[in-house]
Image (cartoon, rainbow, N blue to C red):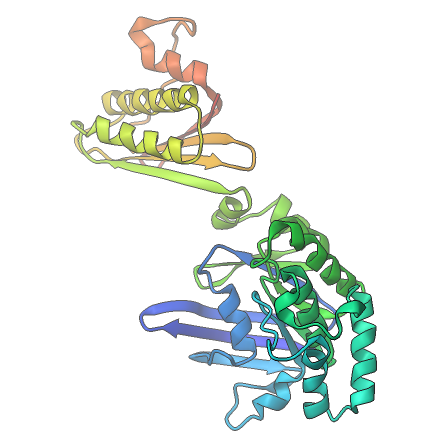
Length: 369
């Protein structure tokens, strides 16, 4: 039997539809990493699993029990789910030992001696036995998060939900928290981890979910998602791609506005002046080549520039409705040809060049040298 089953989960805030129909089954012992851009609904999804956010539609089953059913005892069900927050949420008026033992004593009926013994065992696992009587305010962020993980484990949960457990930490403290989660992963504990640490997700997860457009946009093994993503938005996210787009609908288009947009885009992402000039030159010459040779009465040209931070590459894609025309499919002097200057420039600056013509549209794609 699955530990978690989600069917058609929906959640909106006013007119903003955050989750548009999430379906997911989580088996016992699975370690699932959830990735995606800011605002894609990752954290809201975890909060819905605990009913900290009440879904607008769909069903959630925890250990076979529907928690979205009327009159469910949600407090009882929540004991099966541990939650580790971005900002720890330790009780500031309690010391570490009290933070760890208050819930199992009050909710599970554990004796104080048994609770303290278990707490010390967990603190030993995360290297913090000396902090048992310390208050949270004097602990580092990394230490507080390790305590928060121990507190979750004190309730013997079937599943632990991690909501970006390192996002509030100083970079020097991230490693100590990730090390604890790696340790838990070796014990076959079921975990759902919202994270922006891609290398960590690759290492720990059995399955990776990429959230976009309010749905699980793509999922697969770490190798499938990180090495061979299939869908466009997954590719863009994994490769850290940034986009510039420009539409042209008339021959007398605003060239300075387009070049200014390219300049701003290039400066924002740190392209060198030389590379920016090459990019502007390629785009200008390619557009005029198509205007003069492919466009008929109507002008419909789309220019897309993609910059990938991961390998510092720049890719240019242009689509143009009209007659079939390939600027490089003709005889010209590749060194210098004033009669075919646009083709000469493209030949010298374009790598992996391709041209296709289908349904009345030219599509040209290449990488900038």
